Image (cartoon, rainbow, N blue to C red; front, side, top):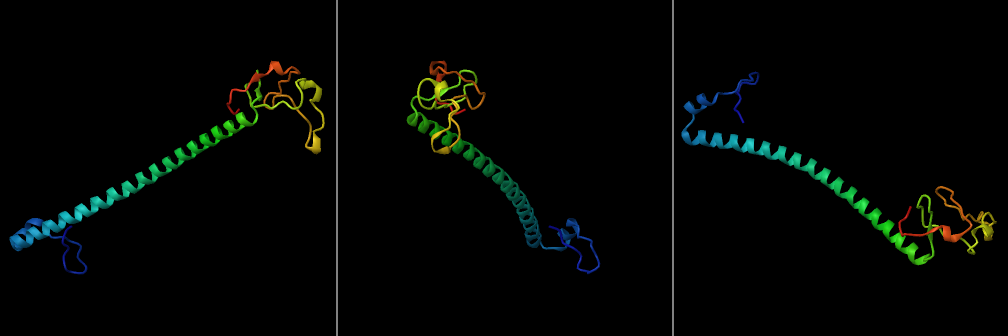
Length: 148
């Protein structure tokens, strides 16, 4: 917001008292208004840049929170599906991993380690997390609905 010397090789600026002496009052007021406008524009630009940074940060936080919320909703929906699909599911009494769906009959030892039908591996009635095993289904705890 300052007026430079008109000479091409000169970097000097006119001092405001000198301008006030040579300019009419009306022109000096216009000069000061132009300086104020330049200052306001500079401040506006700085605030806009800061706002854009804050907005980007808030947007990233919002998206992160939305992802966390969707993940929690997905986990809750999966747990609800599992509760409905496997009402007799149990969980490990040692580490609380669940749901565990014991396969075949109540004597968990009878089928533990057998080859599964259709060649899909072996039946395991052990806890998939800590390998706890008991042949008695009653030693397992009814699943509390928490996916672990």
